[in-house]
Amino acid sequence: MIDPVALQIGPFAIRWYALAYIAGIVIGWRVARRLVEAEPRAATAQQVDDYVTWITLAIILGGRLGYVLFYRPGYYLQNPMEALALWQGGMSFHGGALGVILATLIFTHRNKLDTLLFGDRVAIVVPIGIFFGRLANFVNGELWGRPSDVPWAMVFPHDPLGVPRHPSQLYQAGLEGLALSALLWALWFTPGIRAKRGFLAGAMIAGYGVARLVGEVFREPDAHLGFLFAGATMGQLLSIPMVALGLFLMLRARRVA
Image (cartoon, rainbow, N blue to C red; front, side, top):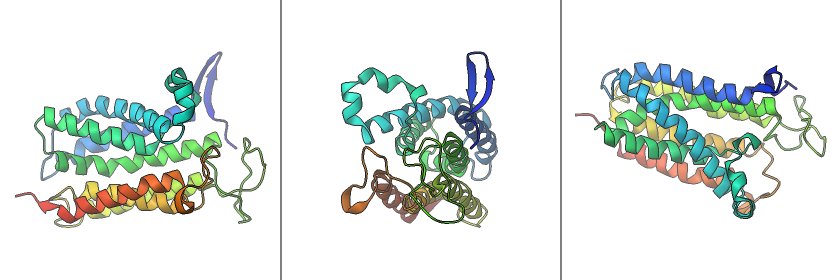
């Protein structure tokens, strides 16, 4: 496995996980600056520069709060100060997504921007961050897959059972990152789609939900939660509303007048 620490200088360590977040945000920011100025214009490049601060805080705070509330509410209720210990790990994509949606609603309202049109542009770059984040999960040897005998199964160093497992982090990087990104770019360059307010945002939300539902089939559920309602994992249960919301946005999308 790859060392989770990218660079160590004395007591100071730079981890691949942190670099993944930085890479996703920086690359997404640079791409979004161009997207918002394409017709129909959703914002200015300078407004995207301001938005980056909002989105960075939304990802971190939403992701952490989502993990606390969705995955370990009982533990953090008994140990509330540990909810602030971000360095111990524990982030939820669904919580981060809610944070991003809320931040986008507030930001576009304050700046008098079309929320759906702006959200469509943001949606295009979201899979970039997801891709790097899943690669970081793989490097960290966390969120591994279920036991398997496929030729590419791997033994992860922190696995107490020490059995070969699906490298589900890579599956999810491919589905939630690469495949979803390819779909959104194909829709972006499809005549008429770009002008339909909310369609791309809906496609990203629904597309992620579907990708997560599939990816969780190969991923080991959280040990403290296990399988939940009807044998589904927490990630799958949280993804079902995303599919519904995404389809709703796509069905109601209308062309910009």
